[in-house]
Length: 127
Length: 171
Image 1 (cartoon, one colour):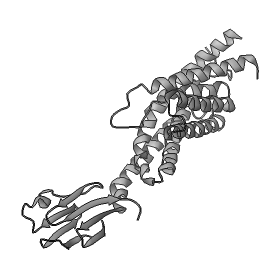
Image 2 (cartoon, chains in turn purple, green; image 1 turned 180 degrees about the vertical axis):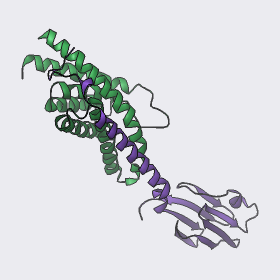
Image 3 (tube, helix red, strand yellow; image 1 turned 135 degrees about the vertical axis):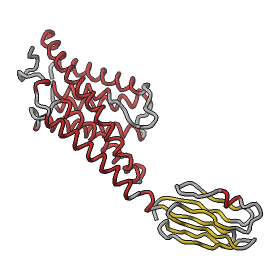
Image 4 (cartoon, helix red, strand yellow; image 1 turned 60 degrees about the vertical axis):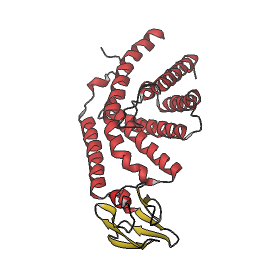
């Protein structure tokens, strides 16, 4: 039964272009996902903020890998920033809780060393 | 505007509003916050294909505004997302319906509308929040746009066949 005013029902229409459209959308979605895996955009604007007691606040861009020394009231703490993330490798504090906190990688995570007055945070955002 | 058309558009608007409100009660998939079925778009697409673009735009904008008032999100972020998505998706669907009619079925038109809806909403949300990071979410929404777009297009197509018969019997 033709119910459409144009004399053709919607089911009669060719659907090749529909299939192409679906394929295009899928391809765009997949390539966008792939690009996110290759270039993690969240990493580019990510940085470390180290608050070092009364000595001051330091910003470390996420790209600048290496070992950083920060001196607190007890002595020098060594913070290592690698591809895997940031972690405290050595600390003069008695409990070593900051070392046990392990690796931090994502914005919002933090390493805190109370005895040596060091707070390391991962932040994200505009410069 | 004839009385028939006025009543018909009012009925369509209230139907869309009902679906809009009903959808708010449907559980959102846990993995995809923000993903929606787009039930109200069935009515928008039906209006577009059976009456025309200006009428569909009217129905969809009214649905968005009234829906915001009903669900209490009027002039909230959610309202702006809904309104902007409603306007752009109906414009794109209207354009495609006109130009690619015959090559693209209602399902294809609907998928294009769903994609437009998603892109617009992310764009507006990024503008409001002043943060472009939201676009990382786009591919996931695009994946979701395909099944929901298909569903909406399929139902709107069915509705068009039934509705045409119904209108013929009424007039």
